[in-house]
Length: 262
Image (cartoon, rainbow, N blue to C red; front, side, top):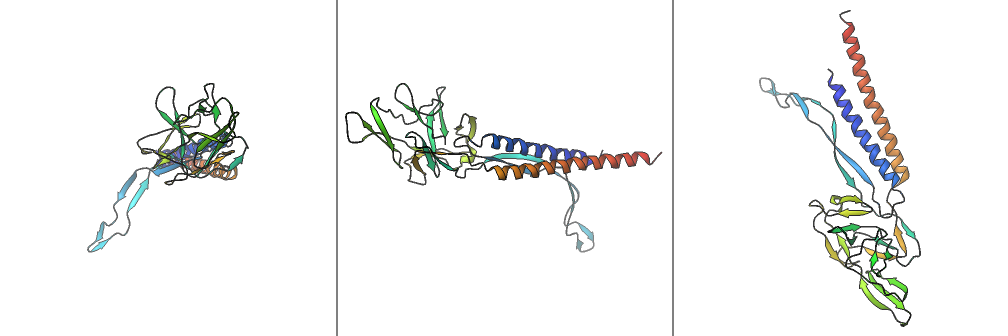
């Protein structure tokens, strides 16, 4: 059987994975804090028919070898952590992180999760939570009689109550920074999980030690660019077609070989 069959098949599988990844990016165009993914590939093993540098005559070596590749394989999916567009909502509890950093939340099942989704809420007990109900860490409680909430660029949260005409600080929203944020594992629900590849998070005040600042009244939209994704999809589709043509060409060559004895 021609090697082109299996080689082109790996190419078709790779392009299909690109399209699947692009589809997920486009589906999350309006997801708050979503970061687009891209697929990285590696070429497969090579059949070395002749080694480079072999001696072809006395004192003469070949400058190149003779190798035949066997296709491509997906190596990884990479999260691209470029800044998303800032959307002005005007809501007191909407925050956007401008720069590096993640909001740390507690998982009811145990452990800690991280998110760039800044659409915060107040639960029944007054705790600051995400839109899914996960409590922000460190825990911050908003008084029941708070009539306005102010969140500074450094994460300081102050409230005005019915009894006081001056602001009262109720807590500070700290952010987590990872050495390799692309190594975080996606859990769904705008949540990320620490892995050995991401490294240990460093908690700090917004605006210090490389951590981004907090913008109140804004939400960070996804960094998916529709035009870029559609162009990438067209490229992947054409590459898929070309690989399928390589299989068709190999089939025609085998048909020709089969007819030689007729």
